[in-house]
Image (tube, rainbow, N blue to C red):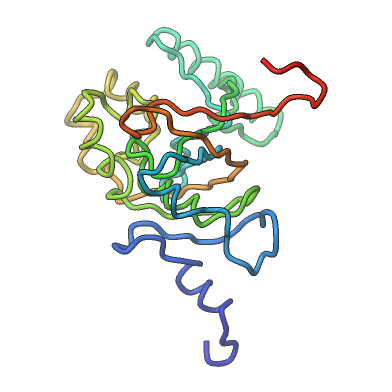
Length: 252
C-alpha cells in the first residue's frame, strides 16, 4: 500500500464502495464499464425519484446470484427446470450415469450436472427505485451503476428478504409469490425443494445450510421515467410515453 498508494489499492483492499450505512451492501468491482467516463460517478439518479414524488424511474437489469461457495442460486437470463417427479429424477440420474460412463470410456472430460438440464430463457428484472417490495441490496446496488454497466456486489442477509418482510406481511403476500428469490440457504431453491422431498429432515440439516449473504452480478440495461398516477402515490399505477410516435402520424 505504501509503495503503490492511490485509489486502485483501496479498491483492491476493500472493494470499490460501501453502499449502505450498516455495511450490508458492498460493490466489489466493475466488470464492464457503462456509458460515459469510467472515472466519473453515475449522474442519472435524481433525488426526486427516491422520494414520494409523482415521478418514478423503472430500471431494467439482468441479475445473477451465487452463494459464497459458488453455487448459482438465481439467474434472470435463464434457468434449468428440474424434473418434477421422483421417477423422472431417477430416470435422469440413470441417463447421467450412463453418459458419464461412456465419456470416461472415451477419455472425455466429465460433464457438469447442469449440462443435462435444458435451459429456458427468461426476461430481465424490472422495478422502480425505492420500491418497498424490492430487496434493499439490489435497489442500492443499481443506484451506484451507469447504464450498460456490469458489476459484482456482495449483499448480506439484512439487505435481502428481511428488508421486505414487513411490506409483504402488510399486503398479505410473501416475497416468493412476488417472484423474488429466497436466498436464505446456500442451495438453489428448486434443488432444495427436491432434497426436502427425498431426504429425512435430520439428514438435511437446514440450520447448517443458511448463509450470511450472497454475491450478485448486476447489469443495468436501462431505465425509463414513469408518471405515478396512483391515488396514494405508492407506485401501484405507473404511466409513461415509451415512444412519441411519428411526426406525421395522426393524434390519438
